[in-house]
Image 1: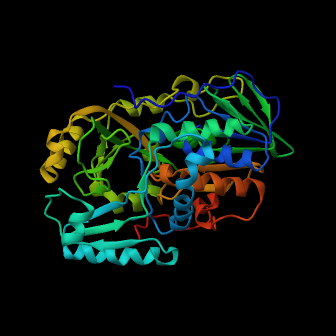
Image 2: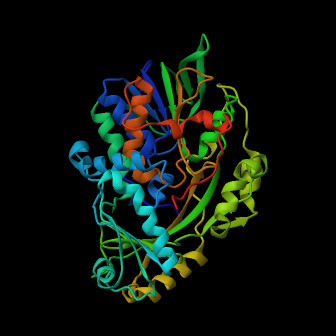
Image 3: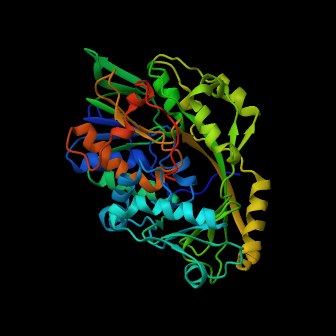
Amino acid sequence: MPGPRVTPVHGDEHLPAKVDVVVIGGGIVGASTALELTEKGLKVALCEKGGIGQEQSSRNWGWVRISRRDPREIPLMAEALRLWPGLNQRLGRDVGYKQAGILFACRSDAQMARYEKWTEHLKPYQLECRMVSGADFAAVMPGCEEPVKGGLFTRADGRAEPQLAAPAIAEAARDKGAVILTECAVRGVETSAGAISGVVTERGPIACDAVVLAGGAWSRLFSGNMDIDFPQLKVMNTVVRTDPIEGGPEAAYWTDGFSFRKRQDGGYTLASGSVNTVDIVPDSFRLALKYLPALQHQWRDLRLRFGPRFAQEASYARKWRNDEATPFEYTRVLDPKPHAKYVRKTLKAAAESFPIFAKARPRQSWAGYIDVTPDAVPVMSAVDKLPGFFMATGFSGHGFGIGPAAGKLMSEIVTGRPTCVDPHHFRFSRFTDGTRLKPDDGF
């Protein structure tokens, strides 16, 4: 089954001869980076091998959350929460944003205590985040019959529509002068005196002074061709959306068996609260030691699978010249098949805890690949070995909500301006400077 229907963005016909910055990747982070750079007066070309927002940027849950974030990401996510409410007006287009809150359910007193401890991370930001139980829980999450003790409720959290957001941001960037190039894979970069001087696309060259790689799940393959070793693997998540349901909860909800958030059309997007599929591929073995701490941390949530994806990725060329066709031209969009079993289990679990979902009619299901770094924290950084080359990737399932702020931060890094947050935790060099790489859930 094809993925979700994304607002189509028609690419520009003509390739510019020269720009200041080429952004590779038309997801929400790439589009946001292009918008921010263009607003700062730079000439920008956004190059996407397929269509804008066609991969994980349109396949995610649509959550805009700071709750239960890795503490290293909280400052940037706080900036994102400041940006999201004004996006419609700024872009002149609807992204479906609504601040409706997110509730993480707790099944035990011990879990309530752990989540309450987590709220300490938000105190410097004056964002409402509190533990709820009893009548307070029922007021936030009416109709819940799941036997829980309570939950962590963050009113500042919200939701937006993934099928709308990246296209709206890209179109706004074009309104301000950016060139948007779809079905235009970047094959490689060109250098002069050891620094970036341009890129070569499948449609021809573009001269530039800087390149930002925002390639999502493809970033390791692209950077590897440049002898830049970026540790990155993928996990697959299955999602289902329903027809509109009258009277359902406004706030989003998470528990082990399922999660949901209300959609702009009145339906709901649901997914397993914890289970992700991990295809075993050649990079699984190449990167095994780097990912061992992450596997130990999250092994209960991962379903390892050996299947056709191994052969597919083994067939990808890992090295190519700029005059050769690349893997990005042979696979324009990653569109994995969703797990029908997980769809059934998710809908069943939701209906058992929220009777209103018993009458939910599934409209569509899809799956997407989430790119993950060993510490589950993104890279937003210059790459020191190649002046003029920057990376904004590895968002580990957090890219949609944080996307507008990631674009802002990247524009500041590229232009050498003071940054909205300290980017130290996002530096590329952490993979080689002896930093201990492991996820941090903040507890």
